[in-house]
Amino acid sequence: MSTTDATNVPYTSDTHADGLAVTGQTQWPLWEVFTQAGKGAPHEHAGSVHATDAEHAMQNARDVYCRRGEAVSLWVVPASAIVASVPGDAGPFFDPGNDKAYRHPHFYKVPLGVRVF
Image 1 (cartoon, rainbow, N blue to C red):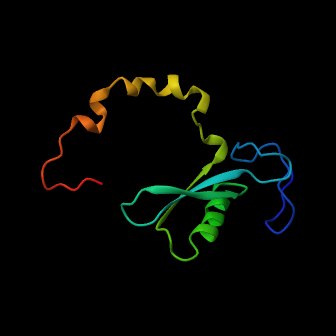
Image 2 (cartoon, one colour):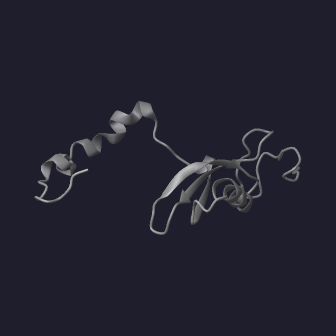
Image 3 (cartoon, rainbow, N blue to C red):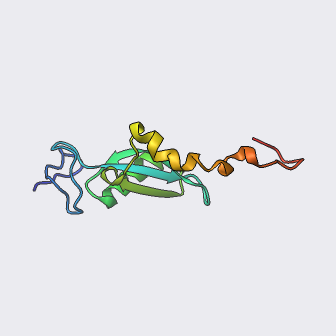
């Protein structure tokens, strides 16, 4: 296991101390970054950073995505921890929601005076 500092060439181990797999032998693990623009606002995906561990990812995310005070909160998540649906399975995967017609907005009447967006 060998590491180098941020100014040198990459991390070259199969796994990091956190147990995260390194994406290849030439890059640090990839982390996805979510920012919150203001108190009470939702966290939104801002982009990605490479880092050796969670603390390093948080620092890189702060430096890249919060330079001008655009965010009040950051989340960093190892990209390897994200699970996504497969586009080819969209029909069977999302079918249970389609048979509940009462969840669709066309069954509700909008009161007079309420703006519809």
